[in-house]
Image (cartoon, rainbow, N blue to C red; front, side, top):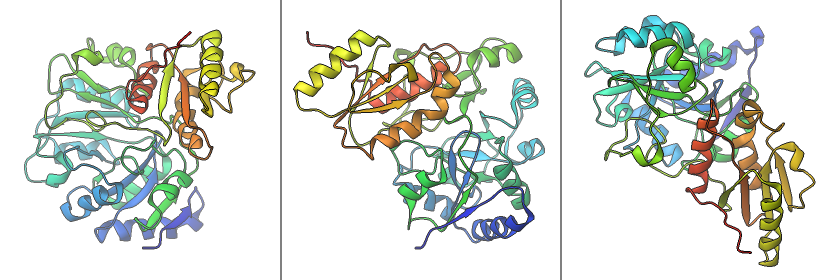
Length: 346
């Protein structure tokens, strides 16, 4: 299968790109498109054979549910049994935006492969002009996980999608680099108080300003069911080829670690704030300015992917605090590293 990548923006000349994407989706195919978080790989969420093509292209386990993307708030009632009041408040405040809300799904409307056998579904309205234009022209719900091979870092540029899925999907809509750079927050409002199943750009603090108490479980509190309620809960994610180790935000410790690793014959890639560029790693990928978590989240997946283009045999990634969007960044880093921390041996 040839994969066509089409650059889209506001120009009317790009009408052909959207028309082609809509035709493919209506024909039961998959299409990659940008959102404000990461690029998604979409199929019409009511077409089970189309949705199964997402799993096939990604090499993704089919017991992982998919998030359904819609273009207007009015569509929610088409797929949800009863919209809780707190969900309505969150939609008014954060949609379109990086918040997925898990609610009770109406039976028999969405493809079984979307819900993975659960009675719930996660809905969101993305805040990206390309995604919204596509969804509103299509006028159908689109199931869309990240547009990458399963387990690899999520794509924040069209070229990342091309690297992973070239020849596996027919079309990529190229809307440039995404803004937030990590996946949406997933909030389960079917329980009281609501529980964050995956932290993201809409933080616990932001949610609580709107609806009061929200639970963000610690790693030790996350007891996973055999079927997870949200993407990214069960399997190792976001990992480049070389093993990733987390390391504390301490220059002396990092310098010592790099000396040790080089003695052992490793080529070391370091992911750290820009101010760490004087540290003598073999490869250095700056997250951005010290303490700027928005820059860090936007750069994280791009940096992890860039490591695959080096000869690095080990990756050291500096950590951040779990305040605000830091909770989402640390969630992704811990998954990329499989919770491995580098411990100096001197």
